[in-house]
Image 1 (cartoon, one colour):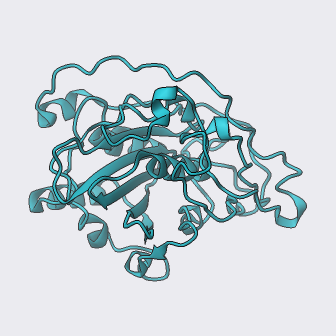
Image 2: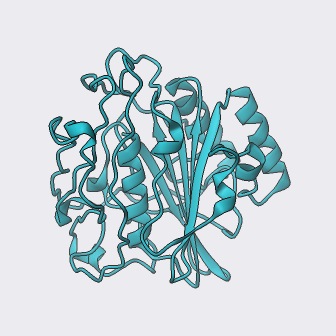
Length: 314
C-alpha cells in the first residue's frame, strides 16, 4: 500500500520548507542482530525528490456527510518475503532523504538505534506476497517508536505488560459521544491489541504514539482509515484541538513504502497549545500519532516522529 499525503504546513512551519529541501529524521545506525541486519542490506535510503505542491483544497464540507463518501483506500503492493527469524535494521539515511531542515540546529530529535524486531520462525513480513492478511507477526510492542534522547516517558501509556487498555486510548478524544462511537467501532472491527508510548521533551512538546492491531489489513483500510481522509477534518476530535486541517506542508517525498499517511495540523487561532495529528495504515496496524505543545508545535519533530514510526511498520 503506497503512502499518500495531501497536506500543508501551518504558519508555524520551519523555514526550510520554503527552500524545497527534503531531509530525513536523525536516527542512529541500525542494530546488526546476530550479523543479519547489515548482511540483509537494510532498507535503501529514499531518493531526494523535488517537493511538489499538492492540489488546492476544495471548500470545506460537513465531515459527517463526507466520511461515508470519502473512503480512504489504497492498493497493497507486494514485496519479497523477509528472512524468517532475522531482525533487520532501519538504515541511516542521508539528510536529503527525510523531512526537516538542512542545518544541525533544525529542531530534530536524537533517537536511539532503530531495528525492526525479529519475526517468529517461518512467519512472513507484513507485506510479503504470501501474507494475504497483511499481518505483522513481530511483537507489536517492539514496533512502537522509542522516545528520543532527553525525553521523559509517560509511564501511564505503558499499560499492563505493554498493552494499553482501550479506555486509555479513547481518553484522547474530546467528546463523550465520539468515545462511545469509536469504542463500539473498535469492538465491531475486532481490535486485538493496543501498544503505545508517550514522552515529553525538555521544550514541552508532548508526543503520544498508539499502534492498534486488527485481524486483517482490509479492516484497517475500509473501517479505520475512513476516519481520516484528505480535505476533511478527522471524524473524532482529539483533546486540545479546536479544529484540524490538512497538513499540506508534510513533504510527499518522505513517503514510506507500503504505509499510507494522513496528517493534520491545528490552524490559528489555537488555544493554549497547538496539536498535530497523523494517522498511518500499515497492513493490519493502524497508528495514531499526536503531538502538542504550549504556544505552537514545531513541524520538524512531528514529521521526524511520523516518518520513523512509518519505517518501523513498513
